[in-house]
Image (cartoon, rainbow, N blue to C red):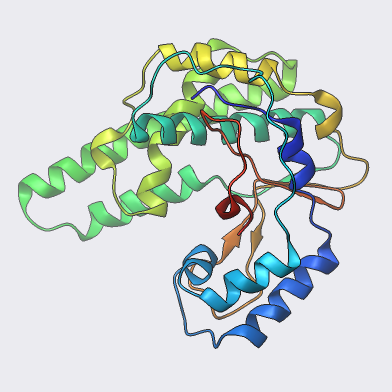
Length: 259
């Protein structure tokens, strides 16, 4: 989905580690945590925590500006989510290449999705259901293998090929399987038009904002708290800045983007 790659949004995403620690302290002061599936769910369902967030992170003034990459077409919510997730992958790949000596990446969510599919295929009952699960696994494994190869080629030569753009879209079709437990029927279903959209988005990125000095964490997980089943992750951590990537049709900042 073409988006406002708004420079202000990157500035607003800067959270010092000390502030994050204070935020988690605030959680325990504001509400009793009873094992929930994710940090997002906890915040969404806890008025006290949202109030605390508003105190810690006041919504900054957001200056309206012309979109760097106007949206070429009207996307459905599902299409918008797919391209947004694909761009998350693409920008992390970009940051990885830019910070090769110090980049530290965890396993992709798409890899966990393939593992989940494999478990489902092993535990499936009934011939037709098992057969479909097996087909899903074969297809997902191939998409993942292709993506790893194209990503490796990119790290080696620094050129984003058309195959890489297709691969991040394919990876995005796998993510919902892990994050939401649905979407097997969408595996590998992408629109070639979206590769052009991703090209325009990545071309609008300011390289200087993604060059780290000493620390580059790609999609890290904050998992020290035993109170969350899934926990929370970040798109990028560069030095002392946490960056959250938002791909949106409208150049605006909502309170929910900060919570």
